[in-house]
Length: 104
Image (cartoon, rainbow, N blue to C red; front, side, top):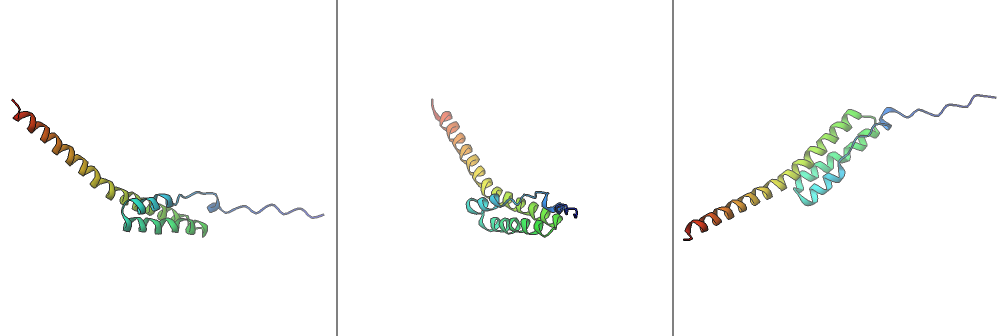
């Protein structure tokens, strides 16, 4: 009777999880800045492909790039909104102060 073969041991890259940030990339494309969001989607799509090929450093790099471009896309959309709100509040404050100083 022969000894049964032990089950094959999965390679290290099958255990390590590298986030692809695809959801953030898609959301930033839809709601924020389209060109930068597309760059984020391209890098996010490369993460799983590189991890499956065993290229963990490449998968980590693509993951970091996808996260960077998605956050940059979000920031480019949010910063003008914040500046607009601050500008509006500033003008409102000036208007209120101007109205109070003119009242007797």
